[in-house]
Image 1 (tube, rainbow, N blue to C red):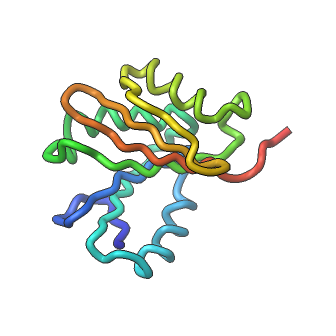
Image 2 (image 1 turned 45 degrees about the vertical axis):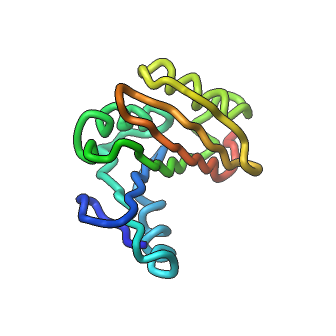
Length: 137
């Protein structure tokens, strides 16, 4: 794998979004070379957007950027502190619906790891969500 901020040609492209910044990028840059070299982790600049609102980028990438892909695989990394409840999957689904992304299916894969199949216009998203960290009290 290779972590980039600009799209390059690759067999597989994964859009990486985070709920609060660049620390995750540093971690992925350390891990990526150890895995499949055909995969490109496209990590666009966060522009200071934090929390679930970062999912708005899905609408943007449905229209431009990597729009040559009909299906877009997404890795969404977010800390627990950005949630109001412990029903993380439900909150992510709700945010997607409020920003105009249709949720087709959603399921928990493991503790803190979820999968959502969604769409916006002609684009389908396969969103893998990792909820990290601890809840701040």
